[in-house]
Amino acid sequence: GDFVIVVDEEWREQRGFRLFEVLDARDVDLPTLDDDLVREVREWYCAKEVEPPGGFVKGEQRFLPKTKNPRSQKLSGGTWIACDVSHHTSQFGKGSRSFVQIVEEEA
Image (cartoon, rainbow, N blue to C red):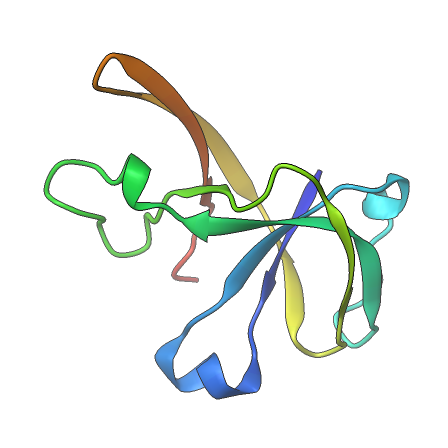
């Protein structure tokens, strides 16, 4: 699916955001930034489970799905922007985990 970053007004100074994957059939036609977005989405979170040894490097956070199933959500116009992610898999102990990273996160 396509990914979007959502920034709530109170998080702007801290550069905080939430990452959502847009999963429904209309995901290829995202409206403009100023439009409200109502879609089936799955939230992703910055995951300690996939943190590299020595901690996260600035601009290279790793994200896992927060929930297994998508839910319908309204993202208000002016609070979200489409972004690209890269998909990765890393070994952790005896297993491996797949995760995403935001491309040019600090841009």
